[in-house]
Length: 150
Image (cartoon, rainbow, N blue to C red):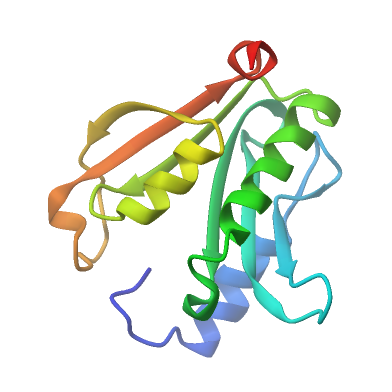
């Protein structure tokens, strides 16, 4: 999320990779998963399902970054639903939340198809503005109780 500019090797080594590989004590695992196509093993992108407090599974953030070539194939919804199911059945999650730029309507639709509901609009604090960020962001959520009632 850097305005489309390449990320420096130093930033990847010192900030990006350590963040992706960070183990959360409450799960003893990372909060990021690679997505691969089942039959070919082709890398599709990655999913984020990480606790907001590294010592508590109560609230987790859902996110995804998939290669543009596979947008519209249902992978984001499939992966999101699988992680939500795992969170509520295996990981003692109480609330799943996700944020997105208001203008990313396709991503918002994935959240809705995954069971999350709109909570609010807000303005994020972007270190560098990227196209669309001037329209603000949205927050979506799904609680364990809501999920169990479906």
